Amino acid sequence: MATLEIKDLYASVETKEGKKQILKGVNLTVHSGETHAIMGPNGSGKSTLAYTLAGHPKYEVDSGQALLDGQDILKMTPDERAKAGLFLAMQYPVEVPGVSMTNFLRTAKTEIEGKAPAIRQWTKDLNASMKRLRMDSKFAQRSVNEGFSGGEKKRAEVLQLELLKPKFAIMDETDSGLDVDALRIVSEGVNRAKENTDLGILMVTHYTRILRYIKPDIVHVFSDGHFVKTGGPELADELEETGYDRYLPQGADSE
Ligand code: ADP
Ligand code: MG
Ligand code: MG
Image (tube, rainbow, N blue to C red):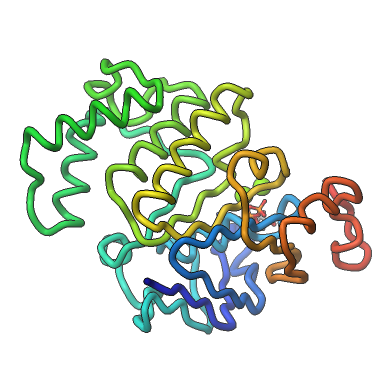
């Protein structure tokens, strides 16, 4: 059983106008097998939290820690974080022309495990995962995300999740832009990872829709750079009814 413990995290982003602090005292503890929904208005800093944990160079930690089984991942390089068991499914997955999905996935797997996976088993696992995610086998030879539709990009993120088997996954709006069928397929993939590997999930979402497919144990409201409320699944239902208005900082408009 693994634990991810975010302690009083403050972080800033480099903007054209200078440094802007976005994360203002984030505290969160996630254990293996738990699903935490992180819900909040647009612009509250959810993606900033995701990027800061993953080690995006544009985001600077001002203070605080993120301990994965006691080790501060914020002191690690992004690849070390991945090796430690952290995975980020991006809100807007990046296209990588010239690098095929199959090469990318196998290289990532090799780096994370410290040795190349046995080719037969790997091919079998890759094909099985793609089939379950209803991805045509041709996608394996295509460049990473290049020309993929929004839904295909999200499936490709879940494919990585299934194959790389991290301890903790941050899913940044994996549900946004998906039609009902794609949402179900993607959710089933996440649920499989949860069952098979006791994955801990930080599921960032703006909408409650995905929570019908991936059941959260705990629901948090994130506003103005930190958590302002924590509750059970019923909190998501309440948000669906009332929106985020009451959680916005004074004077702010919801989007
Ligand atoms: P959310 O994911 O909750 O919608 P974000 O983390 O994307 O929120 O953004 C939080 C705030 O930080 C916003 O005001 C946004 O404009 C700003 N921000 C985030 N990343 C950048 C960036 N790379 N450059 C400039 N501003 C940024
Ligand atoms: Mg946003
Ligand atoms: Mg975002």
